Amino acid sequence: MPSLDKTVAEPMIVFDGVEKRFGDNVVLSELSFTVAPGEHVCLIGPSGSGKTTILRLLMTLEKCDGGTISVAGQSLSHMTHNGRRVPADEKHVRDVRKRIGMVFQQFNLFPNMTVRGNLIEAPTRVLGMSKDEANARATELLDLVGLGDRIDSHPTQLSGGQQQRVAIARALAMRPDVLLLDEVTSALDPELVAGVLKLLRDIGSSTDITFLCVTHEMGFARDFSDRVMMFDGGRVIEDAAPEKLFTAPEHERTQAFLHAVVDR
Amino acid sequence: MDNLGTFLSVLSQGLPFTIIATVGGILLTIVLSFVAGLALLSSSKTVRVISRIYVEGLRGTSEVVQLFWIFFALPVLVGFQIVPIWAGILVLGLNHGAYGAEIVRGAVQSVPRAQVEGAIALNLTPGQRMRRVVLPQAVVEMMPPFNNLFIQLLKSTSLLSFVSINEITRQAQQVLVPRFNPQAFEIFLLLLVMYLILSLVITAIMRTLERVAAARVGRRPSARSRRQATGAGVA
Image 1: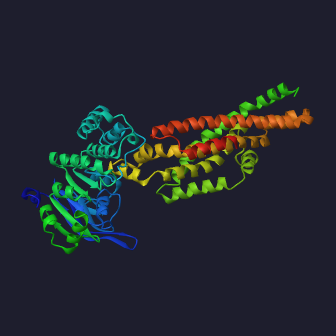
Image 2 (image 1 turned 60 degrees about the horizontal axis):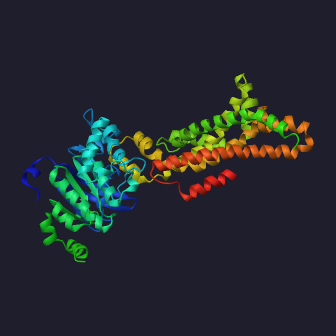
Image 3 (image 1 turned 90 degrees about the vertical axis):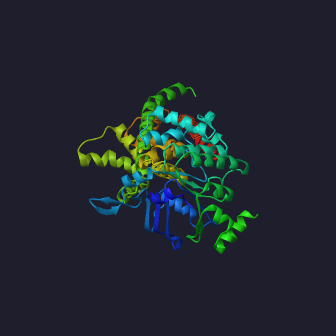
């Protein structure tokens, strides 16, 4: 359970009756949940259950077909203009998006830039940081992720695990309030997974960033999160603290899922 | 081949026109390719339609007739004659820019969607995403087809002989052949060799640029694009 002070604060993320369809395929239906500031929430469930879609909707990579999504009290799809609620313009979307960062399964580093370029591009161009300041921040973050000596490498010269560390540093460089992690270890060699997960645990415990993670790493979900949500068929079928969900799941579907992924 | 020296000197007098038309045509082609190619991807339907009309209109009509039109028909309409070499550059650029627009559009679309999403997640503006992330990667893909296009353009400069520009083909046909008729075989062979050398120069420059662009995105040119580049050179 989230601690008391987290529940009384205004939620960081609100999903209210969110609908998402791809053609005739209903991916999310009437989805509602909130995430408190600083809370770590993991989304688990079978592939195709809509977990990744939730992150993509928050990052404005997809538009929802109904309902509202808000971050820190601001709607992603609408804004107030002259006291009226109107569809959000690009400026409003960018304003809300400033609070959100995302780390992707396939890293999505820019191959046309060095590691340094990847880390300073958005801070200088979007946040208006000076080159010196952005460089200092890049060095600091690369030290944090253990790649201080690779600042002038090309992403293609790095291993998958190293690329994902750079991608995490790149997201942190924008000082997000919310960090979305989309199966960040799924594309990594098994021996590299532990290192990346340890890094995320360290970041989670040393910052007050709100985390929303889609993961198939049940061990990580269990000790990283304050709350775990089990998804199936576009609905939350169980939402509980990890100790509860992993040891005494209430729902039959959760039991079957955990049995299949944990007891291998 | 007693007259080789004469042939070379007369043909060389045409070289500046051929080279100016080629270089000018290539520069205009690059500008129009990017403007029209990006317009084909615009979110505004009006912009897309205008660009599509340009591409289909210029690509789907005869280059020679376009040249005649600018040279003989346009002066009647506007009341003055454009300097011939400028008219030539204009037609070469307009025509090849229409093909180039499709090259730019295709290359931009070949950049993985994940790259754009990475840029959105960092809150880059649509313009920054295109300039800083998509185009630098797309340019690598554009090099081999642009190499082909520029060689086509070089060879199209021979059409300018129809409108009295003294480039190398006109020098051969109007100056040399009437005077040395029995040696027409040698004259035209020499002309072909000159075009070949010029096209090899274009290929050499384009392959260098491709290597530079590929190195900037951290990879070597693909085997496929290397084959295409050399294939185009001897075509």
